[in-house]
Image (cartoon, rainbow, N blue to C red; front, side, top):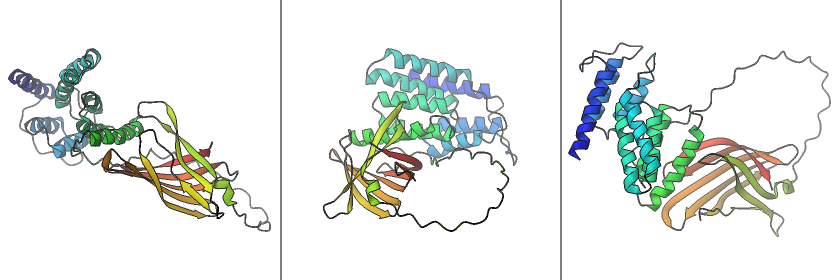
Length: 321
């Protein structure tokens, strides 16, 4: 153990040399950061490696620099060593060797998202689900516009269940707001020529029977690929009123429809989920949807909350099967 700590200390000293400059940091001028200040923050993190606030500060500070900070060669070395251990080891003790290597790599460049992502992968394989969740959140903070950001968030929610099943308390994580994709550049279109106003068409009323059926949506699986997920089922009751019910899920979760509201062509459905094996677990899925003109699809918002404090919202398109 002492030898391992000595290696980490030596590695961190090399980081200081690679980043350049003395340990003392001058005051940072307004409107920009400096590599000297970043280097000092990295050295401070060495003294308090469990500090979520300081790690979050380093990530955000690095994003204020006009140029990306250089990544030390030792970061690349320990990343490669960690990847090698993931390939050759096949048990929890072996995977913890990969965890040690990736933790050393992250100590050199705590602003790089890839380091946290690889560390989380090794921790998940080693059964350290709570730690993996924390580092995936750091990866999202370091690269909020990553192509796999949606998949990463979904995998965090999946790991919450594993952590709860293993009775692991979640670690403090940085605040990672949902980052919508950049809006498209608006295109100016000339207004159409005015036409004589026609008589208003009679208001069309939606037949409630159009909502009857099993509704599904397409989603991205946590490990890639596309999956079809059943959202809910709507039937006609003996009294002629629509009734919504929750589908069965392969995870063993039991769902209950707690809200069902219908107003012409729009519906709101909330499904609450529980796990018999984990009494403390809960999750809610909230749909606010509008029926398409051809009555074959439902479009609108989808919100999800869970006991692990996970919460996000996105648009969905549902279809019947």
